[in-house]
Length: 113
Image (cartoon, rainbow, N blue to C red; front, side, top):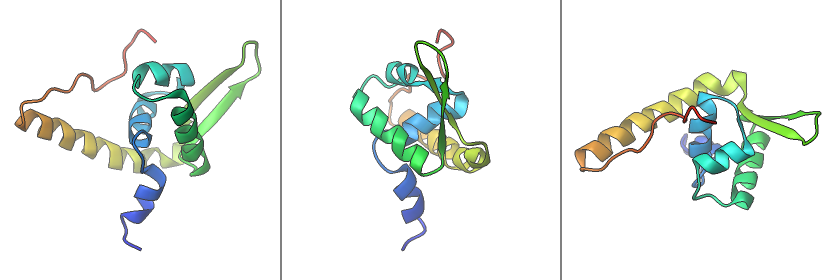
């Protein structure tokens, strides 16, 4: 195995790093994540969240109320390690896009959620 295999196993796929980017900023409900990542289909988002949960990176908290409320967040003991992976990737992405004339639309969560 290559050392890159482990993070790719847990974070590989099109949406997992994006989901982690938003969850590192604050816990979110499924609907919030769908609005933040409109390109992802609901089935794929659910699958990615379940895989992140199975990897021990994301926790799912279910509130006993009607209608049911489910909130996803980064597991506390994994936060620092994920920040060390996700934030440098963001910096590299911002730098690369800037050097090639592109534009990043957002780097933070909207406040109207």
